[in-house]
Length: 123
Length: 162
Image (cartoon, rainbow over all chains, first blue to last red):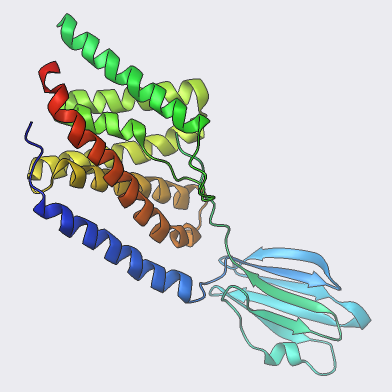
């Protein structure tokens, strides 16, 4: 049986592998945008918020320190804090997986976590 | 007609068993969603032996049967998404007459993975699954090539079935 020409095969494999390599470089080597922020107070998870939903949350931390977390445009920022140094406000917005905002007096940590790249089994 | 019915039944049964074998014996590579695509090999064979519409019927019947017996509605949906895209791409590649059966098989394996990944992105409502795409493109190429090589050996021997 004639099973077709082979010339196209080489091009096909080359093209697919080239796309895979480009995607790999783009996605794996650059830190990707996170999917959510995890807020912990004194080590305990206080809230997990998706980055794609604009919201505002007051986080009651330790030592009477309250931080205000604002999520907008896929980024999380601590806009106000009642702590004395307000370092967390100066840390600015975070959006990439692994980035975090830390408020030491209030023991508040806001960490950007990636989405879980889970693919269901196939049949 | 009887001969045709028997052949189609045989192909569906074979693809069905292949699906089951792959569920029973997953490839131990530590990455979910990777499989050899034995059942896709039957679809590929059917595409060369039968009319396109009949080959599509074999593929869809296999997916429905496998989903109903040892799958779930969700795995059936994933399987349909990958299977239909893969069939469309393999059919177009075969028709274009620019690829050998190995090339057609690679195109099928890769597009099968893309279809499933696309559905995963929709279901999980996150583009984060794109991180997985490079892995699946490469594995789809490798498994597609393996299945294609088997079909290249097999097809000349099966030609008299037509």
